[in-house]
Image (cartoon, rainbow over all chains, first blue to last red; front, side, top):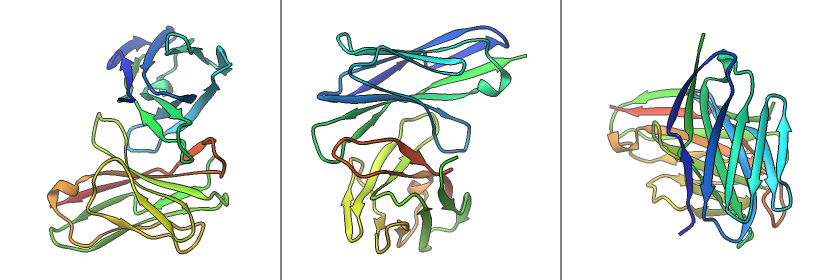
Length: 114
Length: 114
């Protein structure tokens, strides 16, 4: 069964600190992995998208890593800001169909305190 | 900023009412999707469309229906709303191609059925 598991479920950090969010998946055949940021009551916004051959990709203070062999990904946030408080969702796409189905994790709820 | 719009943002209605949630995108994307998301839970695909006059049911069974008469418009309708339909509904679109490209999400409609 294709699944995406994220950890931790929730995380509280102080402003300025770094943190790392984890994503493990069993989706096969793998197409790509995305990290989305979802503010409360709003739609997800893409942070990064990584294909099989990419190991790391950065977007400002966000750095995503991918290990396609172990089927693990991480999202590292440096120098956190209050505006980083949101749910971070790991999404994996398969290439087993024309649709390229998306599989969503439940997200990690990050809270940044001043 | 993605050009995909959902209306209304919030809706509170009585049981038995018929409602239509609107979704429009101006990016010319062929693929469009409807997801349902309960608080703290992952997104579940309820409907998708490859293009005009193409609609399919997703992974999660839903009593809602959709239509795709125009490329840019993908409305979702509930003929008779019930409290169990209370949820957040997210619309998304992506460009054509066998491997799913970037998916852009609307801001969502928070539906409450009383």
